[in-house]
Image (tube, rainbow, N blue to C red):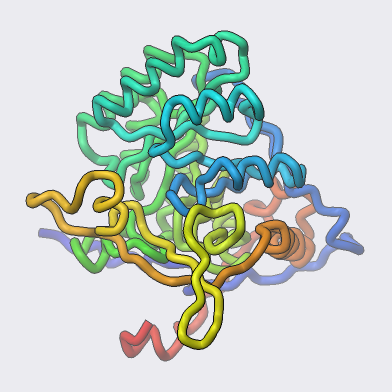
Length: 352
């Protein structure tokens, strides 16, 4: 046993210190990014914010909305869509703003192989971005799976995770991942930290993992922990190349889920983590005997069309850039100085 005594920080533990700026308006800020990925050689040109591959968020309707609005954001489709539905979606909408998601099961790979053999894939409209998603990215079988996917698909951009430490980011990048997902336990409907005691404060994880990835020409995606637009600014300020959002995009028309009225007549939508008993009952016939649920199910307010939320999120990010004089999003990390702040009393007394 050993104890690391270095201070580790979550988004709530810091603020960004303002700096003098030549910017006169938020509209002068460019929040798009251009990347060339290490292994696939493909380029990304857009706003590096991704809707998470969760049932209630990573939907085809969300991807269509982002495409129609032209906001530059993308969606990691959840992995439970049928092959026929995926083929139809890609054929009709293309692949510009979507990531195809898989786990590491035999059925996941079989469905992927069937897609890769399809006419849609051969037409160039098919998969060009792949998200390999597991809760624990530290297992050797996962690393082997990433390496095998890279050998199978040398020209497809691969995002893989989740991990929270630099050495594992390096392992995944060297094994073929272009982009590594960073985050264990920070999500609003994730209970991994409570159930297992395992995790890492998200801002420190982003800072350390970005440093490791960038040295190898890889990228990182901060996955989880963002509850307000300012958290995205902190993630990008800490070195994240992409940010993935779940709960912030839940409860909209484009999300899967039934809108119901509560006892007060307020409209609400069910939102749950992908390791929750709700998700496992739906997709795996229940929680297996050898494991415990590491997610929760909550009721969130119905929020209508996602467009207004996206405007608020991206508007907050632009505003953060003006406060530190970052004309482009790529400059934000260079111009960010974090100031540690006193935590809220409800956190100190364990009532969060």
